[in-house]
Length: 186
Image (cartoon, rainbow, N blue to C red):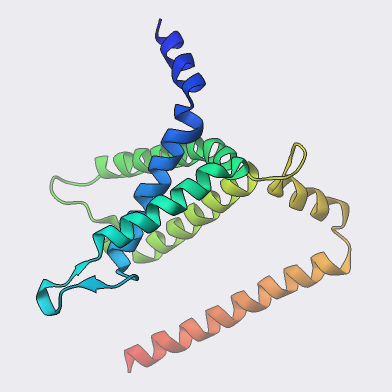
C-alpha cells in the first residue's frame, strides 16, 4: 500500500519536479537572504533583505534547474549519498561525544586542526559524489571519465604535470601558512 503511494508520487512528478524545485528554491533563497547580494530595503539598523526580489530570483533559478533534466538527474543521484555522508558524520560525532563528560561538546574549538581536516575530507567527498552523479557521455560519469583517463595515461606527461602542480601548490600553501603562524607569534 505504501509502495503504491510512492509510485503515485513518482508518476505525479514529485521526485523529478516538485522536490528538486523546492530544494533549489530554498537553498538559493537562503543564500540570497544571508548574503544580501541583491540589496536591502531600508537603511541603518532597520535594513532588511529585499524578500520579493530574492524570492523571484530563487523562483526563476529553481524553475531553470527543474527544466534541465540532467541537473535534476544529478541532484536525485547525489543527494542520497550526501545524506549518507551526513549520517556518517553525525554518527562519528555521537561516538566521539560518548567519551566526554557531561556538558557542551565543541569539537571545532578543541580540535581546530582536525576540524579543518574533516571539513576538507567532507568537501572532497561531496565533490566526488557530484562528479559521480553527473553524466559525461552515455552511461559514464565525470568521475569515471577522469579515473579512466588517469588509469590509461598514468605514465603520460599530463598526469605527471598535474601531480607536480598539486605538490607545488601544497608546498607553497605549507610555507605561507608557516609564515603567517610565525608572524602571529611575534
